[in-house]
Image (cartoon, rainbow, N blue to C red; front, top):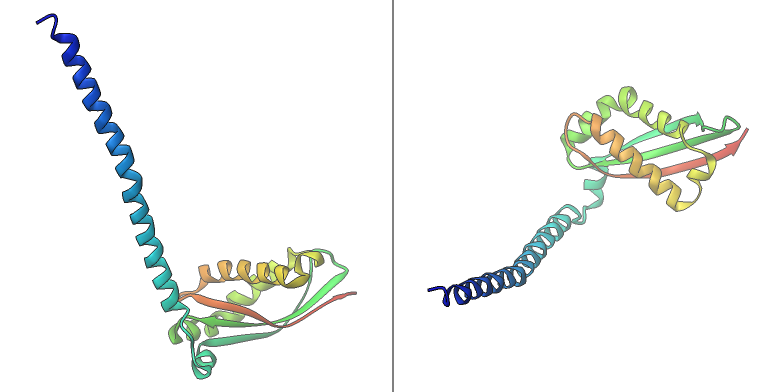
Length: 159
C-alpha cells in the first residue's frame, strides 16, 4: 500500500490538472458566444430604435425651444441658440412641451453658463453640449426619453 500511495496522488493530481485545463479552455469559448449573443441582441435593438422615421413622424415627435440667450462662463461672451428635441413617442413629446419652460430651459441655461467659448467651437463641442443636455434632460422627463437633440441655430458673440 505504501508503494501505491505516490502513484495514486500523482494520478489524482494529473486528473485534477487536466480537468482544470479543460475548464479554462472551454470557458472562454462559451463566454465568447455569450458576448457575441449579447452584441447581436444589442445591435438588433439599436436597429429597431434607429429605424427611419417619415417626415411626418419626425415633426410629430419633435419639440423646438427657441430664443435662448445667455452669457457663458466668460462674461464677455454671449450665446444665442435654438434647439430641436426629438422624443421617442407622442406622450413623451406632450410631457416635454408641458415642462419645457419650467424644467428644460433652466437646465440649458445652467449648462451653457458653465461652458467656455472654446468648449462650444466646432462640431465636436456642439455634440458634447447636446450629449450633456440629453443626459440631464432625460432625468427630469416624467414620461419617455429623448432620442436626439439638434442645434438649429447658434450664434456665439463677444460683448
